[in-house]
Image (cartoon, rainbow, N blue to C red):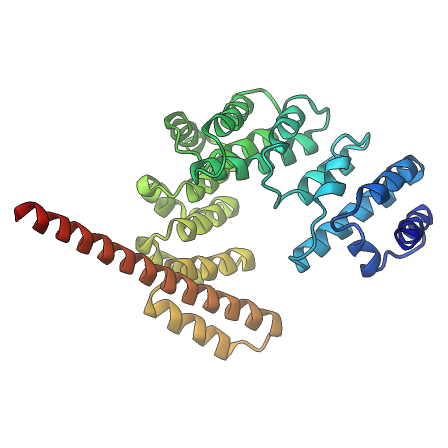
Length: 330
C-alpha cells in the first residue's frame, strides 16, 4: 500500500512540475488505476495546470495506441466532467475502445448539453461504436435506439457542422430506414464536407446499395470527397472499384489518398492486388513506405482468409440444407 501511495504521489509531483517529463513507466501507472490512487490524484487534480492535464491525456492516448494491454478507462471516466473542455474531449478519446453501455447516458448528455463544440463532436464520434454494437446484437435494442435517436436529433439540429457531420458518420453503422434517407440527403448537398461524411457513413453501412454513389465519387476533383470514396470502397469490399483504384494510383498526387487506395485494394482482395502491392514493396526505398505496404499485404492475406472462411461456411450451410431436403423427400 505504501508503495502505491508513494508512486501516485511522485506522479502528482511530476504533474505539478510543468518542466518535468512524464516517463512511460509513470504513464503506465494510470492503467487500471486502483480506487485509492485515483482518489488521491483527484484531490490534487485542481492544483495541476490545464496544459499539463491536456498533455497527460495526449500522452496516455498515444500510449494506448502503442500498447494494447493498457486500459485507462477508470481514469478517463473521472475526467468526463472536468471543467476544461479539452480535458473532457481527451477523456472521450481515451475511452474509444470502452464498450460499457453505462457510458451511453454520459456521452448523450455531453452531446446534448456540453458548451464545447469540440467535446460534442467527440461524443458524436464515440457514440458510433454503440450503434455498431447494437447492429451486432451485443447491446440491447433499447440502448441502440437511444443512441440513434440522439444522433439523428443532432444531425437535424442547428449545431456546428463538425458535430452534425460526426453524428452522421456515427449513424453509418445503423440499418434504420431513416438513416439511409439522411445519408442520401447529405450526399446530395453542395457542401463537400457533407458529401465526404455521407461517403464515410456509406462505408460503415455494409450495404452495397451505395455502390454507384461510391464509384462515381472515386475520381471526384475534390480531395476530401475522393478520399472518403476510396475508403468507402475498401470498407464495402467493392470489387467493381478495383480498376478505378488502380487507375487512381497511376494519377494520384495526394499521398494520403494514394495510401488509402492501396489499403482499400487490400480490403477488396484479388491476385492482381497481391502482385501490385508486392511490386510496391520491391520498388520502394523508403522504410516507412515499405512498412505500410507490408501491413497492407498482411491485410490482403487476412481479407482472403476471411473470404475462404465465409465460403466454407456457405458450403457447410448448403450441405445442411441439402440433407434436410433429402430427408423431406424420403
